[in-house]
Structures are given as C-alpha cells and as structure tokens.
Image 1 (cartoon, rainbow over the protein chains, first blue to last red):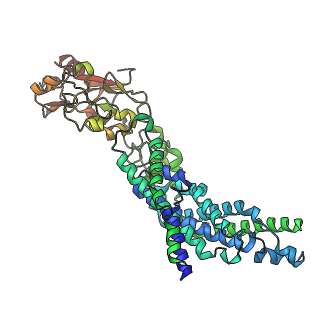
Image 2 (image 1 turned 135 degrees about the horizontal axis):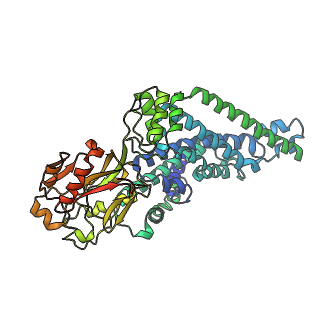
Length: 232
Length: 274
C-alpha cells in the first residue's frame, strides 16, 4: 500500500509539481521548436514519453546491474580476478553519462524505424524532430534523476526499484506532453495577436514559458503535504 | 584493482555496443520500408527547393506522386524544361507542354492613384487590414502591407509605392504569394511570351463606384474588346485570355493599351525583349 502510494506521489511529482519543462527547465528546445500546432506538439509529447520510458528501463537496468559498487554483473566478473571484497567495491558510475547517451540514441533510432514502418503519416509530420529527441535533455535528465536515487543512497532499501524508475520517466514524459500541449494551444491563439516586433516568435514564446512556469509554481509543496498526511 | 576496473568498464561499453547494434541491425531488417528506386532518382532531378508550386508539400511528395500516381512531369516550374525532360526519361513518358509560370498582381494602383485612403492603426498585415472596412476605398485592390512579400522566399515580391510588385527575374511561380493574399488578386499565370498584356485591376464595381475610389480602375468600357478578341468583360471587369496570346496579338494589345481610358492595361514580364 505504501509502495503504491509512493508510486502515485512520484507520478504526481514528475507530471505536475516538478514538471521537467516548467520546473527544471530541461527540454526547452522541442518546447519552443515543436509547439506551433497542437497536433504536432501532442505527437512530439507522445514520442518523448515513449523514448523516455525505454531509456529509463535500459539505464536503470545497466545502473543497477553493472555500474554501481557491488552490482551483481560487474562484481561477478571481477570476482575471477580479485578477492571478494575489492571485487564488490568496483565502481563504474563514471561511465553513467556515456552509457545513458548510448541507450537514448539507440532507443530513438529504434523508435524512428518503428514509426517509419507503421505510422508513415506521423513520420512525415515529425520530420527532423524525431532524431532531435536524441539530444533532448529531458531524457538524459530523467536518467540522471533515476541514477541519483540508485547510486550513493545511504540505506539500501531506499534505492529505487524498476517500478519507481519507470513511473518517474513515464509521468515525466506525460508532464512534458502537458506542458508542450498547453504551450501550443497558447501559441495558436498568439498567431492572431498583434505582437510588438521585438517580442515576436521565440521571444514571446520564452516569456510565456516563464509565466507558465510561475503558474506551475502553485503546485509546490503539494507532494510533501500529501506525504505527511498519508504516510505516518 | 585499477586494471580490472578499466577492463570491465571497457568490456561494458563493448558489450553494450555489440548488443545494441545487433538490436538495431535486426530492427533495420525487420522494419525495412521498401522505397522505389525511381523515387530517389526523381528526387535527385527535382530542384529540391520545396516551394510547393506543384501543389504538393515538397519535392519529395511530388516525386512520390510522379512515380506512384503517374502525375504529369511538367508541374515543376522551378526546374523548367530540363527538369521535365529528365523526369520524362526516368518515367518513360512524353513531356507535356511547358509554360513558364509567374505571379501576376491584378492591381495597378499606387498610393497616388487611390482616391480614398484612410489611416489604419491596426496590425500592419493585409490579412487583418482586409477585415476592416474602408482601409482604402477600393475593396478589391492591393492593401500594400506586404503579406505576399513575407510569404515569398525568393525575393521576387516587393511593395513599390504602396503596390505589390513582382520581380520577374526572381519569380519562380510557386504561388506562395497568391495563397496568402486575402483579396486573391495575385494569380499564377502562364506566360506564352516574355512579356504579355494584362489588365491590372480586380475591381468588379460599376464604373461610377470604381472611378470614385481609384484613378486606374477598369470601368468596363469595352474599348479593349473592340480591338482584340482576347479581352472579355465580365462583372464590369476586363480580363485577358493569356493562354491564347501569341506574338501576333502584340500590335492589337499595344493599341488596346493606348486606347484604355484609365490606363489599366499593361505589358508585364521580364524587362528584356518584348
């Protein structure tokens, strides 16, 4: 029960309270670049959600299996060459960034092939933006957040399991979709407005992004309030 | 210790690379999309400017239409005849008739010709000015805020003294300007010669009303129709049948231009030749 509640809180936090785009300001490039039309923004949001979940799965598995000190796979292999104690102390977390980028790039490539084969319409409407998900910092950010909850946790029971990791990533993607769809709705209305010349295009978009972020600040503290109320 | 760590780190990267490349290689085969080699050959020949003049979103869409739907090969105005020949070679069909297309602005009123102009304080765009009655007296003519200039990617459209003017040396006939013009006064016209006569007016009002708002409005006096069969009057507005124009009609068109009481017939086209 407490585990389910924890998952719910992680989901709520990732999607609304600590929204990737509007709280941490990661993934701004697609947020500004693909938010011209609601349908495209929604498609981009779904693609990011999908990729972010796959990337979280891969990166969590590799982190717990190989990278952290005492990980089963690396200490098993090291056990052939080293005494048990030093084998368990092998720390490969320096590899984390490069491994995550590796995982993200290949899952984007995979998604691109899949979409191209089965959803050619969606593929042509994405155009260049699908490969650009590779360089979307929101995804790397999700991987690194998951890593920070796995590596260097004092109490081993507090380390995140796969369920928590994927919940964070998936609902982080949902939060990204919410943010980009709200943004594109506003921008569609904005097309009809008389904007002073210095503020046109990207400038007004960033200003609106800032105002949206202020609005989302209203959620701050909701998560700790719920946690205090429900978990003794 | 350090060597083992390094070895395992290198091994991890290696194994990941091998596994992921296997998965991607498998996916590449499994999800392969068969592309007709003809389509790629067609894309290579098309100019690749993605102007949309053929009616498709871009050159690759047109290439697909040519190969799969047997679309005519002469729709690309940018590539012109050479491009159409190349496409015909690939597809094994005959080239249709090639006519050079240009944008033609069917309005000739510069600022001084407009008799009832008013101050407009809204957004400086034709699309919004068109919604407001009485920005200028004529409800058919060019508004002069340059929506077409912004739409043109080829520097072929300029506002000269309050009137959208085509630079025929740069125009490729893609039709981007005619799509954005809220008054639909820009038409994409096939030029049978370097210069063709045309009626630079779109005003369909009766002579009295048209004259009240513009110095160079067509009043539907039928002077031009008496000189040449290619002029015809509908809704108080003279139009010229550009498709039937040949060099023979040059003299009669010249006479019609002299005869026109409001000077609304002009020769347009590239500044060289006739």
